[in-house]
Image (cartoon, rainbow, N blue to C red):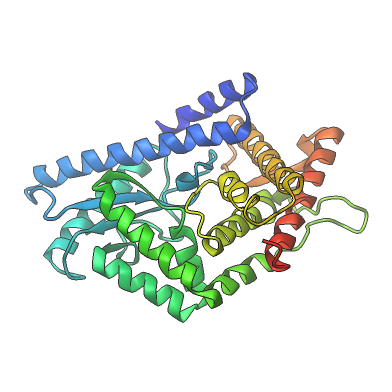
Length: 323
């Protein structure tokens, strides 16, 4: 079960494996679980008398798992593309039932349903190839805040089961469309610029009523969103945040050491989140991206504060047009 991966993560950290590498292992397992869930879902469909898949298809994992950056609080983020068929038609209905089985199987083994509904069992995340092209065109053209969020996460998608070529075709269309739209890229930039440093006038990290700070919101999110936006702008078709940032250094004469410091901060923030999730798991506390500062030593708090301050570099790189 997914819970067993807490033990794996702890073992890797004890062996001094870098947090980002631990996240890559967790992400690979999440992709493997999703692949296995798809295999079992196909069996369930046949056993229920609904037959085999009515069309070629691909199941994709989105978000942090697609980037190789999932931690232990990961939930389901997936989408599905099938070769041909109308919304609400017989083919679409088969895949709706199939994707429902996938979601239920994943939830049974400890990967919870996505609270935001980003799962192939919902109509928004399940389309034919032509349907996906139309949806993506609409996201980029209308540029509503919710559309920015939707297409944003889609750029991290990777196929885990089925016909990879179908997923590749959708990914290519999304990248081509967004790369051509300067106004869309500006909208992506604005979603990053709203970040503000969670630091008090005394230089300490601000916490909530429980003495915690959300390090996804205030740390990881602005970094990976900035890296994603820059990758779209410069047509760098990679997914992992470090890869995206390094891909734009040389051709754009960016400050190598500055970008590497940002990548290091990204890893340090991931490490703090992962360590907290391991502590929370042992105490039966629901896993989240929120880190309890009182559980850190003075040195750890100082290092974490320095890493969070480095997030400003991502904001500067994208908002000042330096990359």
